[in-house]
Length: 115
Length: 112
Image 1: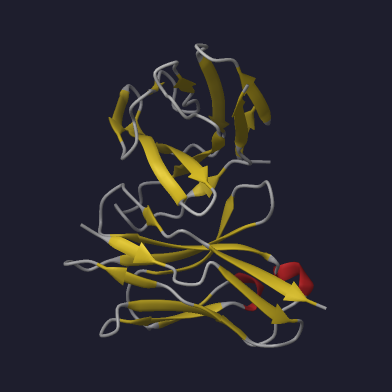
Image 2: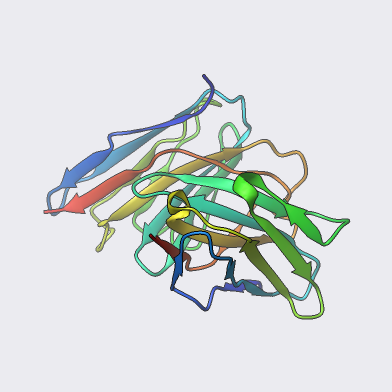
């Protein structure tokens, strides 16, 4: 079955730690995205990548970093510089059939909690 | 800059009743519009999208939406809801880039 997998489902971080969230897709999609979801705030874009070895900052990139070394993988690192990382993180991918018209396919999410 | 407003944070409705979830957008250019559904602790799934053509768009699970350019709206409707429709619904807009702007979501609660 094709789809997007995110791991782990739940993640706990201590103050000052960096943690990495995994996102893998086998849909052969070129574009991948990371969103942060907080209650009452909808989805906010952290980073997106249109092609391997290229990525752009979204609206709330501070305290986060990404890499795109393979087409199917787009890991997100939450660094200690992110002061309020507790949130639900969603990864998505799409086929760039035409900018802005794509359907985004979402993974099941990772819930990160800072202890 | 674009923005999306979902004025209703929560909408309770009885089973088999009709429902409308409101979405208004702001943009100085033409946009593409989307509705996604999110079940608890899951990712989002596309319900429907408007790209061009007919302003009435039909989607999955019996939902439909109508694009109204003059009122800058894209309201989601279903004539008869089921308990299984209980979820959070997100409206999103895109003006032709790789950046999608999402609304804050509307929680639909279907009551027995």
